[in-house]
Amino acid sequence: METAAAERTLAQVDERVAHNYHPLPVVIGSAEGAWLVDTTGRRYLDMLGAYSAMNFGHGHPTVVQAARDQLERMTLVSRAFHHDLLGQFAEELTDLVGKDMLLPMNTGAEAVETALKVARKWGYEVKGVPAGRAQVIVAHGNFHGRTTTIVSFSDDPDARAGFGPFTPGFVAVPYGDATAVAEAITPDTVAVLLEPVQGEAGVVIPPEGYLQQVRETCSRHDVLFIADEVQSGLGRTGRTLACQHAGVEPDLYVLGKALGGGILPVSAVVGDRSVLSVLRPGQHGSTFGGNPLACAVGLAVVGILRDGTYQRRAEELGAVLADRLASLVGRGVLERRVIGLWAGIDIDPALASGREVCERLMARGVLAKDTHGSTIRFSPPLTIDEQDLHWAVDQLDAVLDDLRAGR
Ligand SMILES: *Cc1c(COP(=O)(O)O)cnc(C)c1O
Image (cartoon, rainbow, N blue to C red; front, side, top):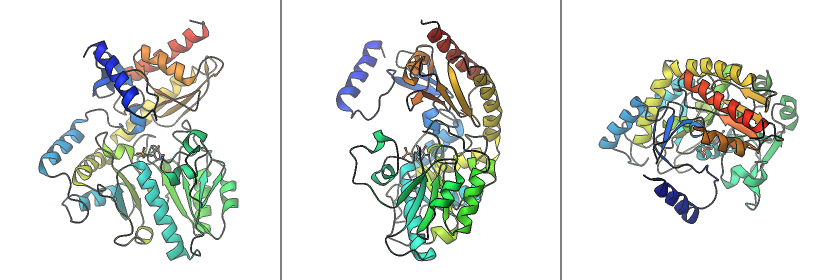
């Protein structure tokens, strides 16, 4: 494809696709491992990894083979009938994360919605909260998806403005403040919903002890602790689940993104029987949730995670990344937060916006995404070569040098 054809794609997207994103002006035509290739043949290192949905690399042979095999066998029967993979997928995924049961959905937002519905129903039927009064505590700076209910408890003005009226029943408290969670609990509280590390907020890592204290508070007050691990889970932080860093076990995990192996949306709520068994036929569902293709891909992902190779890789490469980013602090970087192979990098806003840094990185062959003005997130495929990771930081270093020199 020539440059003119790429220009045509940009024009078509601008003309015919709603402007709910502001993509960098690059048109990707193929991908392999941690590399993306544009339609003119230029290679870029993928330092976004599809917001951590691409943890095992583009075209991971095991995942692709599982999908290919399943594609030819059977792809969709709906939950009206059984198919031969859902039971196995449920057993293997729940065993991986140490829970009893799962409820399969497709996107992360749907799984968050599912967890909220389950928590409310549990609150009324098991905890005994009076009808219509259930409350869920969430954190400021949260990102849990884009549905009307989920944006109801977002505090990002872009996510909310113009989309009301909002769903009631949510109380937001500062992230990282366990006392604020404890103080917000009332007899009507059914759940606390948190990201163990806030992804979209810019890889915000809570203080030591936070998740443990929230867990204790929830247990003491008979409140469900729901961990949204859609972005933090499945290897990204150096553990299968980010909650494992704190040795904390929530009542419900919300999983998504990487669960689909970078091939299709696969999400799930995973939890204890005592909670998920509040749902009975007809009370919740999804035409595509738990479909055979999704289960085949999900099984391949669980298989990859079971031996811990990628978790160890995330931890080891994360240490390399943390080390390299530390050397940029004071040279255009105000602060960096790193856990596993996942980094939030705050650029000095006096130097450049996050967007401008990403544009300059793109010109140097590195694709990354800014968030909240001046933060850049790195979440490359965990399969990235160590030299490539160094090279990506070299490019950021060079971009910051250029900006400081006024080039
Ligand atoms: C991305 C994300 C979601 C939403 O997932 P979608 O598949 O985009 O609906 C929910 N929670 C967290 C923490 C996320 O990062």
